[in-house]
Length: 198
Image (cartoon, rainbow, N blue to C red; front, side, top):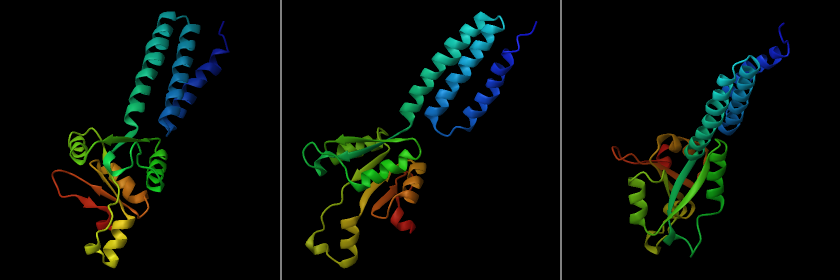
């Protein structure tokens, strides 16, 4: 005799798989993957395959979800270095430019991690060693000898962000306000600034 209650459970497999494929948030996709594995393990158990059900529960669900969670958590971060000497003692970059950066990356389910360095040489070395994805530079005060109308406005309002990752450059160039100047740095070619693009 066929147990008809298995059919609704089996219908959950393609439904959950479709939800998994259509999910744009990686953390929600992990939850859907866990549900998919749990439903598959339950069906295997009900159909008389406890060894396959146990394997699916342990390997296909528990281990896979754990590994995916670690991979998603570590890959969905943008590490931005800054020189501690540019900021007050114990302080770090804050205010509207950093809030704008956080908002831009939050839309892509990424987080912004600010990494302090003691001086410019350590910061540049970390950038060259690929320990960080971008550099954030506080605007320097304008010297009296440099004061012309155009360069005074530029130097006072712009925050400089330099990245070595082309996709991050494209995202920041398109979505950050104009007071943040974004530069893409590729060691094989000369740096390209977002102000040159406009």
